[in-house]
Image (cartoon, rainbow, N blue to C red):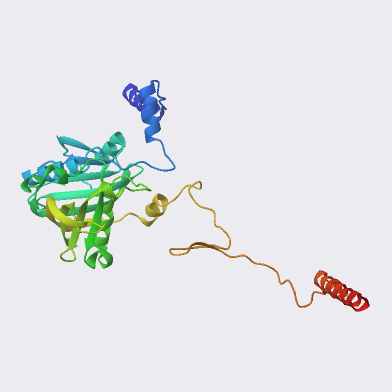
Length: 326
């Protein structure tokens, strides 16, 4: 009986500790809480890079290259994680915990096994819960170190990339459409309204080889003289380069998708009546005026113009009489 009471008392104590709301006491902790608080315009998404129970040398280089490409916007853990299995029920608990701890909404998880060699799982989270997943197999990998290029062509921190998706599969095949969304979210960085063309110095080229295979390459943009105002552009492959084989993917639930797509009332623009926008003419407005019924309106008999004509004719007649009398 005493043991049962002790167990009940301990569980109640644990629940009280869990439900206790801790307020930040220092300035640093207050600033951290404010950074993680919901905002009308969210900042750039951070990426969490994790290792599985077993990883190959190829996967280690891939994860290092991804971390290098997203430097400043990613967090990399080097320890092995035995309990992370994103596609299994209960295997995403520790993954969601790491997402909450690091405040990352994107993650890249690498694992290697006999059944799925060089396995790469890219996923997104919403409210620090798994939103969607894409599992990829890596083939024909070439690292960034295997390419030789000048320092000027190296990707700079803060620069924005271009994306080129080649192939009809990105518009018709469900797996490739989902992969396109995830890759755009992973590598695009922070969303900006204004962009300097000098900051666009690289391009990601994704070519659909089949319904489940994509060639992924990373190229730098080299500007050369063309004799005109517009410079001539050349693509220089700087790596990484690899074939991505789509193995499994999991789309979000429809209710979760609708909840994640909601916008705050402050950001929604009020509809303007009788106003339309055109890409060429810009803003176009319509003005509605009542019928003025000009034909039925009665004009006055003595108009100013008529009086003036009569006065001039009278003056001319008087001048003629004076000449005749003289």
